[in-house]
Length: 482
View 1 (cartoon, rainbow, N blue to C red):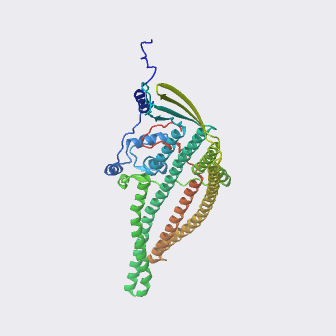
View 2 (view 1 turned 60 degrees about the horizontal axis):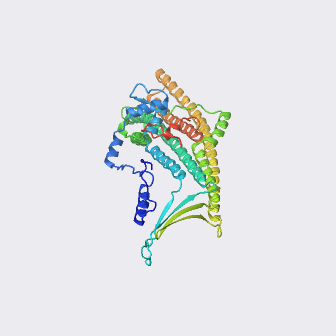
View 3 (view 1 turned 180 degrees about the vertical axis):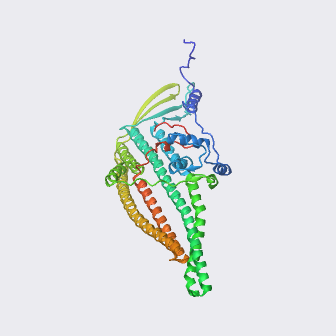
C-alpha cells in the first residue's frame, strides 16, 4: 500500500456517503470570491470634486502621456483647446460612466465563456420492511453534466465580444460629445468677453452722443423730442451690457462643468478658444466624408450591434440542436452498490425554436435599419455642417467688407474734424455705427467658428487619437484587451 495515500473503505456506510457528498458540495473545487465592499459617502465624493485642480500631478502625467510632451511651464496659466480637451477626458464624469458601462460589457465576456456547472442530486431512501441483518437505507446520488452542442457557447461569446466592442465605441462617442461641448463653451466665452468690451464701447458712445445732444438742447439747437431716440438707445445699450456681464460667469461655469472641475479651479487661468481650422477643399471634404461614414465611433458601434444581433440569431438557430445531458448515478441498495449512467436529450417534437429565431431575425432587421438610419443622419449632419460653414464664411466676408467701409468712413470724419468740416456729434455717430458693425462682425465670427466645429464633429476625422480614453482616466493603468 502506498504510505502517502490513505486507503478508502471498499464500501461507504450511508452516513459516510452523505458526508462525502456534503463535503464535495461545500468544497466546490474552487475558492468563493467575495468582492470587498465599497461604500459611497456623499460628503467625501463632493469634497473630492471640490479638491480637483488644474495643477494635479496625476493630470500632468496624463497630459504628458497623451499629448506626447510635457506640459510646460507647469502649472499652466494659459490653456488651449487641445490641452483642455484632455483635461475634460481626465475629469469629466460622463466618460467615467461610459467606461463603467464598457467594463460591464467586458465582464459579460467571462459570463459568456463560462461552462455550465454540473448538478448533483442526493436521494435518501429507507426501507421499512428490510429483513434482519440487512441495512434499511437506500441512499442514492446522481449527477448531471450538460454538454452544449452546435457551438452555442461560441455564439454567446461572439455576442458578448461584439457587445463589448459597441460599449467601447460608446466611450469614444462620449468623448466626441465632451469635446464638442467644450468647444462651444470656449467659443461662447471668447465671444462673451469680446462682446462685453464692444458693448462697453458702444455704451460710452451712446453716452457721448446723448451728452452732445443735451448741450445742443441747452443751446436751443435741438428740441427735447430729438433726444428721445438716443435715450432709448442708451437704455438698450445698458441693458445689453448688463446681460453680457451676467453671461460671463455662466459661460465659465459651463466650461468648468464640461471639464469636470469646480469653477474655482479656473480662477487665474486663461482659456483660449479653438483656432479656426483650415477649410476643406471639395475633394478633401468628399474624402473625409467617405472615411467618416466608415470610422465614426457611433457608426462602428452601430455596426457592432448589428453583428451582435447576427451572432444572437446564429445562437438561436443552434438551439434547434438538442444539448446532451450525461447523468451518472449511484445507489446503495440494502448492502449492494448499484451504478447507473443516464443520457438525456431534448426531443424537438412540439417546436423547433421557431419563435426565438423569428424574434432574433426581427432584432437583426431592426439593428440593420438603425445602422442605415444612423449613416443617413451622419450624411445629413456632414452636408448640413458643410453648407452652414460655407454660408457663415460668405456672411463673415460680407460683414468684414462693411466693417472696413465703416472704419474708412470714421477715418474720413476724423480728418474732416481736424480740418474743421465736421463736428463731434458726427464723429460720435460714426463711432456708434462702427461699434454696431463690430458687434455684428463678432456674431458672424462666432457663427463661423461654431459651424467649423460642427463640421469637425460630424466628420470626426481631424481628432483621431482617442483610444486611450477607454482606459479609466485616473487609474493610469493598462487594461487587458477584451
